[in-house]
Image 1: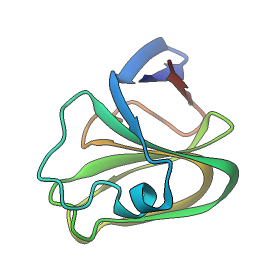
Image 2 (image 1 turned 90 degrees about the vertical axis):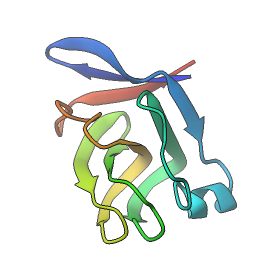
Image 3 (image 1 turned 120 degrees about the horizontal axis):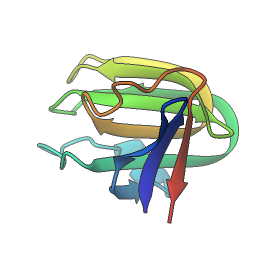
Length: 115
């Protein structure tokens, strides 16, 4: 699976190695306790409906970019700092990426998980 970004400039991959956090345990842990992730990696949280989705950086050792999307449309993008970062937005898809990988992704753009 890969994560693609679609904007006025065309479509390009944000990550070619995507894991999904499908269980409550996977969603609760997210990237906690990992020391690093590959440059082309993303962790995707897929939810059945859009509602407020919070993310914290407690026990995350490196900065990340987070994208919140609703029906494939980006509603928020934020870089979070290790240990102290926090963000929230209403979304049905939340994606965590290495810091800097969401550069160029803007509110209103589209993202998609592609098999």
